[in-house]
Image (cartoon, helix red, strand yellow):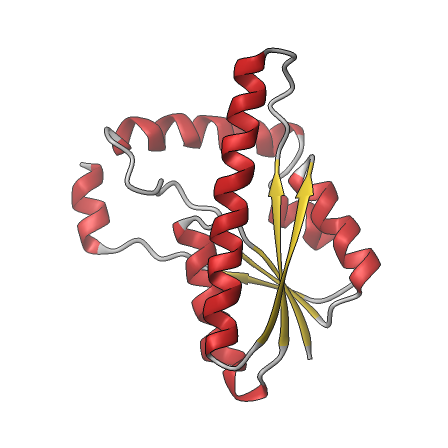
Length: 165
């Protein structure tokens, strides 16, 4: 079995990674972690530095996750891409033809961000605008990918709910 996991080393992506272990561990599938770094669309050196920093962080996170899968007996590899996440993941599924694409459902729970409640509200606003204009990544892929898609829910814990208040 060949599984492709949309992976950005976020809390939600780690939940999806754990779901693969739990659901498919006995099959020891080949797992390709695709990590897409979106271009910041600016010609400034500051934007270049930000892109490089994000690229290196995502690369390190994806490689760390692949190493953990390999330690558990999975055949794992990392695929890094640059551009629009929706289009790059779709392209990867068309080229690699996995048996299953796994991704986490987006949630408004940022990873350890100071003033997280503000970040969540801004994120919700951006998400709503993005969904109205482009659709979410999972919605986009659900309409276009030719392989089955597993969208893993990302539950909110009680402590996260209290922290949001």
